[in-house]
Length: 287
Image (cartoon, rainbow, N blue to C red; front, top):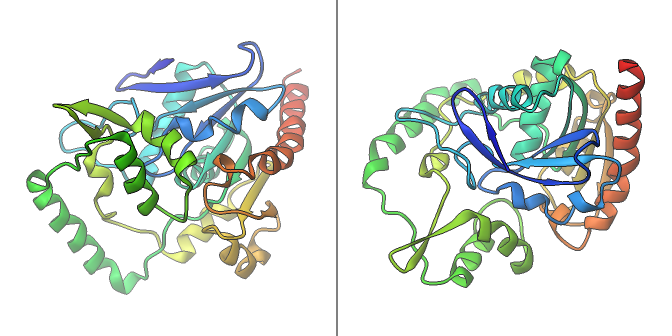
């Protein structure tokens, strides 16, 4: 399916009955909507709409001079919700999609009903003293962008191997292939990524730890965080446990993409009661 907003066309995948309450699913960096292929069908009583975020999958890239800071995705989420005529959002996010979901709930509290976060919560942090270096790296990368050759693969299998060695954490070939097949297109006999190469640029301005903490503290809706034991957030969730008392943290065995691996049933069993309760509460409030 496609979702038309005033500025962009987004591509999406959907599971569940069309008249069921909608859960908007947001994938991780350099992934796409297919990353929810195994999890979404297991979630009952809801319609999961997984969107290819801007610059990813089959969705539009930002225009000339555009960029992909995390907060730009928050605005996209709201325009997508408006296009789908969703006043209140149940957000399901993985990795970067979880961070964007959190930021949306923190900054647009009237539009979010619940959060379900998979191995993602805080934006990446940089100490203030590294601001100049960070900005310099970002500008230098952008000035070289036009001279960077696109990665080309003679087969989908080679692209899968490349994906297994990139990104965050370990991912199996089976899981990587699900993401890769949606993320590739043919070009003169080879395969190239559909994603916008500007997604690889260093972030020009990164938040401080204090700023990230303020965002997380601003979340007021029912929220659950699934932390993979070998993922990205488990150690930080333990270190900052006292600041996460308003968020239910569940630790599960697995790697960063555990919702796309063999642990998917465990992930669904944790998410289902949280989502069911959140949807029920939302319906009660509306009536």
